[in-house]
Image (tube, rainbow, N blue to C red; front, side, top):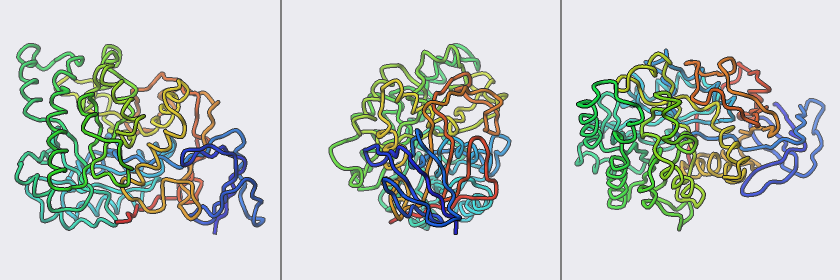
Length: 446
């Protein structure tokens, strides 16, 4: 039974920062106190003076590309990068090959993760126009939720049959997570620009093609349907000012039936960055103007937006550098998301307490994840030590993604994740990994 004592950390938890010690025994936080002495001679002591201790980030939206797209990334490579970035648990999307649209294919992904994932894990079941019977077999105790693509579909995963959509919303108590962009609006916009530019459309027009109107049409329909049916709805990667009025901060998160997420890239980039970054920052939904970015920040800070995630989606550089219509959307972010949010703290845009709330506490509450997301006695010891005065620059040599690049390359962060503990195990320390430890399947209190 392993024993670890973290000494003299600045503990950031549940709205406060206080200096103290945390004692870990086996997988769990056994004691939190102002001063704790080693219990036995075999207790490992980690001196954390001057460092901040966070509950590990729970990333509720990633694409790790396994199975079927492992030239871009796989569960082992991307979870490893996530752990180096302070992410201790992730929820992965169903649009791999084959799609996780049957219980059999879903469980195959869990089997892969059990053998290879550095972090704790869960996966979304993918809804389609014709798999409701299979969807209803999903176990709410050990599967994060159901993912519906209401735009930007992969293969047959676009759910565009309104009768089917209402049946799904009416039939399941599972959390339904949605990608909201109206496909007809996008296709109409795309056709117009192809007529003008051909395949090589300037990437700066991406937010006009995948427009704010396309986002609002889709998300407003999803919210209306959730209200009509009483479904538990979670809207991924919001990107527009218009959508912010669809969500409330008037009730506690645990009581919300409709919740919202924002991704780091929509907080970090805006449309002025297309000139420099080009298709490297082509995401769906599109990065939009400073006006939209400002509205996202306001809603995040006033609690209409509940969680921060990455939508980590690696592609090869060769793929990303193709002309606009051939360049896939998405980019890798898990290694750099938490340092990016701390950079915003240094710019006085957000507090450390609010970062922890949105990246750890709230995902745990929102998904009802058992015993994670907080620094509490009896909870799993998923913890991250951060040195806020240890600068480093993102360069190719320190990028851990399998695709080998980052849209934040050249950025200097002043904070560095020095230790990542997962289920009481020190999995990452100062650039080195314990490759013998694997994460656990998340369980849900439903």
